[in-house]
Length: 281
Image 1 (tube, one colour):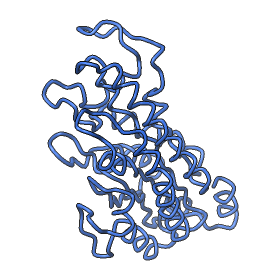
Image 2 (image 1 turned 90 degrees about the vertical axis):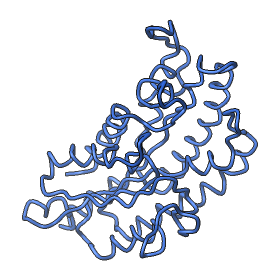
Image 3 (image 1 turned 60 degrees about the horizontal axis):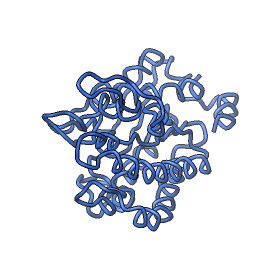
Image 4 (image 1 turned 120 degrees about the vertical axis):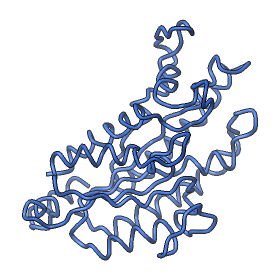
């Protein structure tokens, strides 16, 4: 991806460079509820996409935003539009993105995407909060095929000069630690399965030439070893502490809501921003 971007820049096909001349330049975002900035009171329009847009505007003041994300979207509904919570005139979220890219050739600076968590949660999460490992193992090959299809379609429509950055997921279910009876075992079990999802996503994106914003690493979801002192809870693993600090999962008012809070969305945005700095001129 970096190599093709450099080649395109040398050939003069670089929308970011042309933005300085007054041309409209857009950031295109796709995804699920995280892309819409969903919080307990609904989609806020103040999620990581919005934070990232505002951050990159410091470099590209003319940058506009087109966010086609949909809360509740799965990889399948993103492709087909079937059972999508959102309506798109083009047919599906992916169709809307591809149509947008086709209508604005050379006017898109970069694309971000998050997708896949709802595929797992809708199919493999039981009422106890346990994510069924066998269910996920059966699902992942199909999910990988769909994710690859999505990013390939975006890459073809956008062209080689437009960076695509996709994310791994934080694990909100770490918050079960100390929250419910047996919460420690539940947090460990769910994290092991969540790691399989993230490993598949990272592989699919990398194989397709897409840059990975490793949000899972930012939230340190694997780190049960290091501990921090949390008032009222004592020493707890750092991954649990961050899940509780940066999402609503442990909030007394909005318990077990898996969405990031304002601070968490900013952490996600910064993770994307770090990757984009190596891709944008």
